[in-house]
Length: 403
Image (cartoon, rainbow, N blue to C red; front, side, top):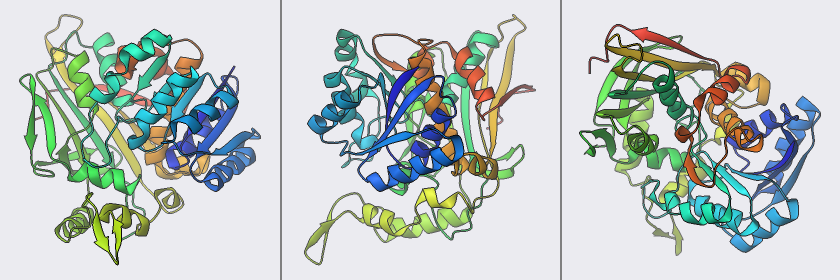
């Protein structure tokens, strides 16, 4: 049994804290902190009502390293779970080093002034965490996170090598809004509007944002248009599966979403550079975030399912030649909301954050330094997915994807 401090009180933080409280044999004491304490208090009240467990709440600026260090030392957790914004990864890592505690996140660092997310900023902390005898576990969400674990499970149990890898992320949910994002609007729109990149022939190949579209029939959702994008697990998977010839990431978007986003881009509302409005400097995308629906508010109206998984092709472990496997999870928005008060997009990230934390706190995964989730044994993580609300299936396909 261990103490844990969660930073971030959005939908993902809410799911993670609810699931931690449901696993009190592992998470003995839970603390939750964010810039807005009232959000933490609302989550704590929901957790108390649903589970009977108590959550301590705090206000903190995650970019104030001395204040965050002092808070961590005062609470005394074994692990800090960073579910705040990607901009704050490095300051939270700094505070963990100063306070002497382990670190976990679900998304890699992204500077505020450049829509670019890469692991090199965090990988540069390797020596500092190793010398401190601490672990930093990166990317323990769904994608990145579960999708990486899926690939490593296939490589351990089905495929000697992985030659081709496609990650397919489908949200078939309908929230009833004309335009809204299912997680932080600022991060979502920066991600979607960035140039697409995929791994091929030993390097990343860049294509225009939303420039490559394919249709795919997703189980329990139906046919959807999906677009090739860049996602950070491509970088770490290319590193830890060196034989990869090609790796791509796909995400589904409806026509209405694409139309709204195109207009917003055309009128400059997705810009991340400052503009002067009435003598005040503002960031257009941050203003847009302020007027869009809060993602955490969409849970009660969202219906449908998510379907996220990997399709991998490579040399079979049993020597039977090249084979293709499809491993996936399907999550129901309404079921997720009934359990935690949050829709499935938050649920599919918050549950793996809890499981990754459990791996660290129970000593199932150990190490000193900075690690990506795919560097550890996938089996115990995969087992907890099945028992904690994200069951998975695997099937053999007759051939690789035809595109």
